[in-house]
Image (cartoon, rainbow, N blue to C red; front, side, top):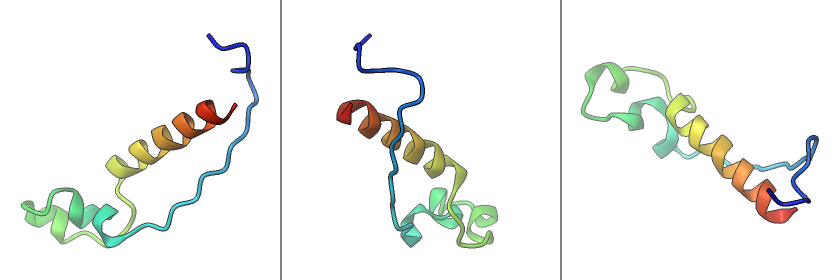
Length: 60
């Protein structure tokens, strides 16, 4: 493990959510997904959190 990787590091990652990252876009072939509101999809949220973690680790 890198010595710079310590408990308590902070990083802020901002991203404007495009329509392509909303629930209906997650599985457009599913009528149930398409009927859902255009909110940030959990599946994309998980990836976004991973992205922020990767960026935070790279920057330390």
